[in-house]
Amino acid sequence: QVQLVESGGGLVQPGGSLRLSCEASGFTFSTYAMRWYRQAPGTERELVATISAGGGGTSYADSVKGRFTISRDNAKNTVYLQMNSLRFEDTAVYYCNAAYGFESYWGQGTQVTVSS
Image (tube, rainbow, N blue to C red; front, side, top):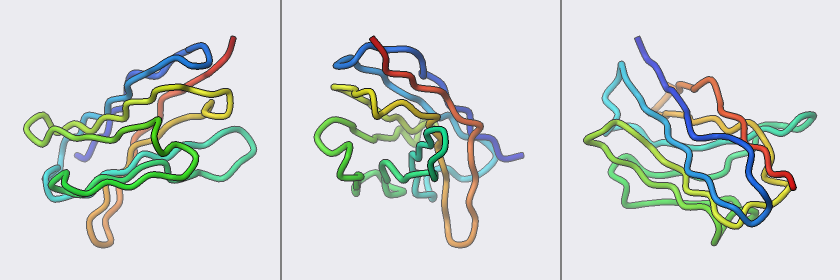
């Protein structure tokens, strides 16, 4: 069955870095665009970053541009989110999403907490 398993979240101080990973299985990973979303308590889920199926195209929310980098390794069925210069407002549960046409799959999420 389809699985998306996120890892790499944790507690980090402002200005610090984390790298999130999302390992996929159960579908043809290399044909799916991949996205990272986040959701803070009391807010709607927000699109953070997108990468095309082949990895040649990326886009970012304005709030993370220049600080976050999305990448993928199709040989490992894994998408990454490198997060640098973290801020308090980056605290959220981060979810990866796989999308192809009308199909969309979600991981269970990983908590990122930015706190001093």
